[in-house]
Structures are given as structure tokens and as C-alpha cells.
Image 1: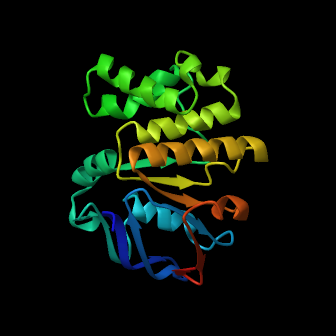
Image 2: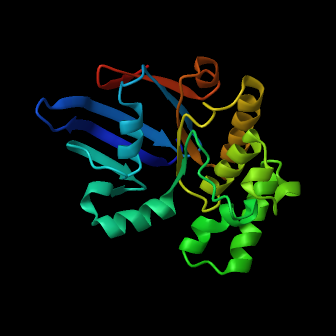
Amino acid sequence: MSELVLSCRNLTKTYQGPAPVQVLLGVELEVRAGERIAIMGRSGSGKSTLLHLLGGLDLPTSGTVTIRGKTLSSMAEAERGRFRNAALGFVYQFHHLLPEFSAVDNVAMPLLIRRTPMPEARERAAAVLRQVGLGARLEHQPGELSGGERQRCAFARAMVTAPACVLADEPTGNLDAQTADEVFEAMVQLSASHGTAFVLVTHDAALAARTGRALELRGGLLGA
């Protein structure tokens, strides 16, 4: 059995206020190296909340998230940020590429944050961009790329640090069906070649069916 790279145990999240809102009621999840998992659910079911907790962008009310054997809630904020940068990649519905930088420099950014020398960072970024079919677009700025190319660039940026797992929140939600399919195939190729796990939040049932495992978040719990 492949390595367990991410897990959560009895994960709960309650937003406090005049009337507290319980979003997650005890989520359990295990993600192994190279797995591709889709999480579905109605709007407002807590899918993005769950992804934020898995990524250490927010802390649970109770329960634990463990990545590569380390529990996120046991870390100080600065340590959690460094660990997140090393172990995880993130992709969102909007690409969040920096418009003034080229594709290769956008993808190199996570490496530069880790103080990787610029030549090495650009070389590694270029290699991942070639893997997603953007070898001829290395020096193009985001405004010169199509929507699908920008999203493939965002996937390359998430993968450039060789993370254990990539968390993707509706990454094809802004794309037409054909372009979404091309972007998904690029994700599958990256996952296979790098052994990286993907946890994908999506409303697209057809896309979810093409992952290794599709789960639904319903009533604050995650199940098949």
C-alpha cells in the first residue's frame, strides 16, 4: 500500500456568532501518494472550508489534520506556513498568476520563496511547464495566455516544489468543457509522473467520475 501523505480525524468546524454554524461534524479522510480524490457537495456544504483545513489555511474547532506524519495544529503559525509551502500545492478556480511576470517566473515563485537560486528555480519551472504543454509559452505573460493555458500554468506552479499533495478548489470551474478536459488531463499526467496526490473540489460529476475516488460532503460528513 502506498504512503499515507494526508489524513484528517474527526475534523469539525463551527463558525462562532450570534447563532453558531456547524459546518463539519467529524470528517474522516485518508489520502495516499499518487491518489486522485474528488470531493463533491452542494453549494454551502463546506467543501472549501474542508480544503482550507486540509491545507492548514485555517484551524479546525476539533480534530486533527496530519501531513507526512506531522499534525498541523501542533505547529506555530510560522512553522505551519513553511511546512505548507514544502508539503502542499494549491490551485483555485481563478489562476492568481501575477500579471507582470512571465509564465516561467510565476511558476518559479514558490521556489524563490524557499530561496532557491533564480537559475535553478527557472529551470525547474520550465521543466514542469513543458510537462503541461507550455514549453513554447515560457516567457509569455498571463495576459498573453488562454484561459486553459493560465490554469495549466497554475497547476505547474502548484507542482514545482514536488509537494506530497495538491489541493484544488474548482480548478476547471471557469473553463468550457473541452478546455476543462485538457486541464484535467494535464493534472492527471502531473500526478502520475510525480506521484503527487490530488484532492479536487468540483461540481462536475463527469470530472469527479474520472478520479480514483469520488466522495460527497453531506450533512457535515464525508462519504462515498
